[in-house]
Length: 414
Image (cartoon, rainbow, N blue to C red; front, top):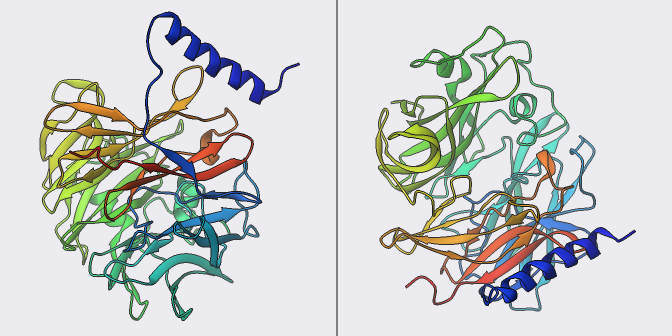
């Protein structure tokens, strides 16, 4: 019996041979190298966090000793960074027991600070966050976890990670039970504002408020409401949240809502229950995946104004992938994106999309074995360096599990 690696090599060779038989050249992709290695598996998580240091030398990463199962309360990961100027040396920074496969422990550089990083952890029965100066080693702990940081580096918004773990496994943290497990839309939990100097959290939008704001379709007596996927805008004045509520037969419906940093002025930007990955284009516009807009019944990438039902236009129909993770680059002229595994070979394809010309540049093909599915899948989640020279993705490496891959996109954003 042939091994999985042999079969994958055969499929890859067969595909390349088929291209040659048709007189076609194999695709030419930009240079890529793997910058982490065993023992252990490495990944960063979500696409909307600062992974690269301000000087683009260090790349943050999580490190774990296992794959292919849900984290438990006892599973601890290491957080660290890769030195791109010293043979991709791994530099440990700390530990965390508050993490998930999709978003790690919210490890990221603090905006406006050259040496400080932050990540979430659990201490006894409380989720916390650590701020570390990677140069001096000075560390202090805040009595609250964080989700998305404001550009000023002084404040953040966060969510109830215990409730998210209950309502949307794979995105919350193990180890603490939801205080409001039996309540469908509790008034005592929701989105919090966090002062990064004092760590003091303040509830600014409750789940009860969300459940009572606007029209919530298919809101059943046993629909549990939760808010997460938070992202502060580029001017630091407002933030996005996804308001989700569970359905009796499984799954959930979703609204995209924005608010001021104090929780006021809620705007239901996508009200129809179908919203997904998003990114701020600027302080007044949001690019989001949604469906059933502008006559398109399928999922697509749509530009919205930051107002109630603020649809503007569809972007890249049929070219820009409608299920990927979006980032604007090069003065908002380009979009960085990826795909979920596609085809028999389960290939993920990070890509660049030029808005003005409707041109797409694929950055590589990354095979995702079938064991990487569901909660412990490995989405590429492409992240750009500050100077837009590099793109870093998470992807399985043949025989070595999930690792960080660095793609050189120099010269492509022209």
